[in-house]
Image (cartoon, rainbow, N blue to C red):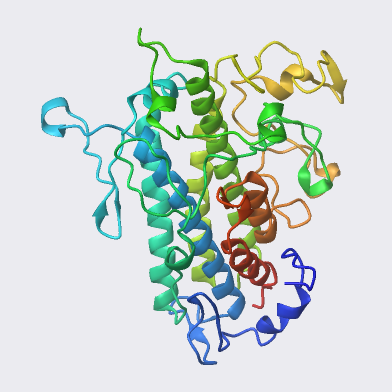
Length: 410
């Protein structure tokens, strides 16, 4: 940290960690670091050594996947599927596990009902996404160990945030707080714009402006907040919570969608590259699923939060209609069923538009530090006891800086 206490700085002081290009000695902090030694670890397929930069990238990604697993487990506990008997109704069982221990899902009937307004299969999709993130963290830790790196476990020190108080939710500490989120929904217009690319400095409007203005909860915090009306209908507040979750799902998964290709450009070892290119597309599959479901959020108002109708051709930020230049209209930017990446400019405008993942450069916001900062801005690490971020932020920023400092060497 700098003397003024800020954490998004001090990058140059840590660059020496990566100078050798090979795995260097030195533990980081809180059980996060590398095995001592200076030997290069050769891959059996391509014979190129795994560099310290490769290890830094893998370590950071494992840490971020642990964070994502933590938040998805909370969504699954409340909004995942209720237990099913596959032999009787032909559905696969829900077998979510963390460290060999079963995760109980589907604890809030009211929350599930509100989520199913977005899509009837939401509980199953939530469980599947949770399972994927757990598998990513577990695999990356195992792979790190196989290459002489040190597995990462942030929960030992930073799982201190309180979970929902809804009946049945395990009252153990969590890494993430889903109750004070400022959700950036600019990913919505970023993937619909044909004229702007964040790698070229493009700016994008929010689909739900109110979500970015003030903190809102994406999970019911109490049994009262999770309850349906006496006639079985959904209170506006509960629907707003579920719809906030729907847009938060897309926000979380678009980050991984961009992050993996951005960091893959820094990898030196072919097998490590294969790991990133194999996990990354699964994040993209998650993102497209959630982008589709978020568009079904009903037009409701709950206090200071309004979910606007997005198919009216009206910009929910400005009220503008019609053309916005370059042959693009307001309707193009907000239409809910435009869930495939609109072709836009990439590398050089003379090549013409192409459908791409965006951003894929650090300049465009696709790097590791940018990913951590977006999570911090989202409010994921706020301790409600003091309204400050937990110490996990400093550790994640250190790992992110080391990942971003990696350079391709072979």
